[in-house]
Length: 282
View 1: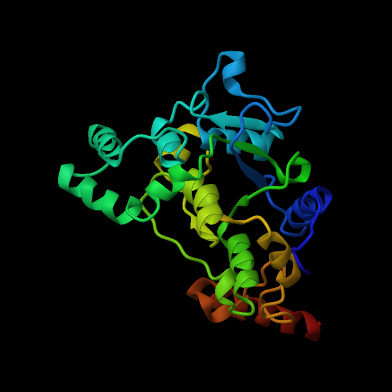
View 2: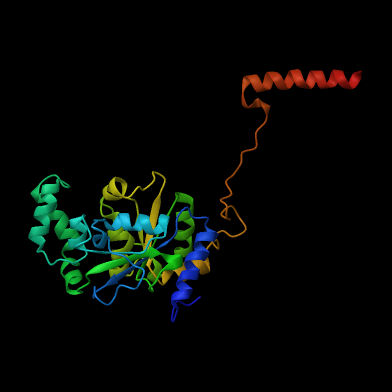
């Protein structure tokens, strides 16, 4: 199933198909990065600030996947200011960003934060700013008003395994999953931005913001991917181990047991067998 020349309707249908096939508990999320806040926001998409509200990106994901809302988040709408900077919506210097994170106490000290900045931002920070994106449109994929750049799917562990299996079915370098973990910035960065920038799928373990702000459930994990990968996932879904234990629903081994399992079971078996024999002799 080629992803070339796919229409908006194709993406909406793909969202419905994977939602139904995996029996997901919430809708896959469509994520689109925009540059022109005047002309790139379609009708029916609202900005929280227009209603006097503020909203984080991870909250917008929840509203999209659970309440079918269509939202545009910009630096003006987003109370989670580090994610606005990390997305390049506001051109702070790396030093200014590092200072904000030191004050947050995300890392042990200034040196730890500098090491993190060198590792995380040295290669990507400047490039993201130069892309000149100014906001993100978030919607349920089944009703997305725009062809997305990234798709984020929240699910439980077994369902995530099916998606990973589908991406790994041919072991092509293009679809190889590439993830690092920090415990925060998981959904907004790895669910949307990093798949868009790096063209690599990312496993999402919901982080501090997700759990504090966005109502993420304890059992939920996620995966963010370049949007076109959804068609590859659907093409290969449930193919791994087909006909064996990996069909859907997950077929786990059921042990073969007998009454020797416990002393009480064994005793009762002996009593029952004795009584059954007595009944036959009557």
